[in-house]
Length: 80
Length: 323
Image (tube, rainbow over all chains, first blue to last red; front, top):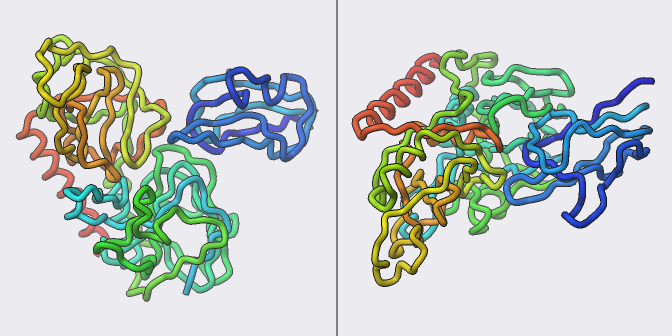
């Protein structure tokens, strides 16, 4: 099965949930659609939503909640 | 002639070399964070070094040109594309009417400068076209560019298409990045050990870093020398009686996370400052991404002046190479 990478457009701090007490935007193994938000990147005092940008099955996150992230770094993989 | 904004990027603003002379009224100099990159971009396209271009942080804009133009992108390494074909950075490149300029993911550095032959011809505010978004001053209606905007472009001069700034004259932050500091201002407020720790520790750029100030975290907290708080300073040992803040000054609120004031700085307040980043290294700060490991390096006034002269000779070398 072909894997598609979802990359972060910006550097900052990656979050998997909209607020500390909320569930993850997407759990590992979930299916994603193009416009689904899969996380937030915090930079310059602003939180930016990261849309999946692709549709696919069984998302697998390669980065933990609250971890630093660079622009172009792979956040997750999905199966096409 | 105009350029249409199809996508603005994250925070893309019109910037030139800033508006000196109003800091005492609370209006900062502003202008490109990486001034050398903006000067070089302008030189490449035959503009005055102080012409207005775009500064884009982390994410490049997507722009459609409605007339032939020559452009140059300097500063951070971010692949430049014209109708999807990759083009070189730090080089004068031609764009035809109807073509779209876009960018790929940022590779290194933090901010690109985009110059367009003729310059971005927004009205001047207090002698500059730089955008100061917090004061809603300058640039395009005092704000970052937005989708659907049309950027007016001035009349272009003569341009040597294809000319490039030699790689040896471009500057990128090392890893760790090194920022040179002249201790001073309120250095006496911290203990000798705290002063040593500040230079020994490896710091990291905090995600909050922006045009107003660059915050750093990860080093040891500062210890202060005991004192009887002077009238108006308050009980927090990192506070002083309100004073003027220089550009590049390093304040450490609460003694924990140093903040370097940059181009859109506030002009005064009540935090002590342990020293100042030397002018030669201010451009470099604008190219630091969040989480970049950073060391502060102590220098003397003579070393700072030597570094300033060295930067001037690099600028002159770029001028000579593009004549």
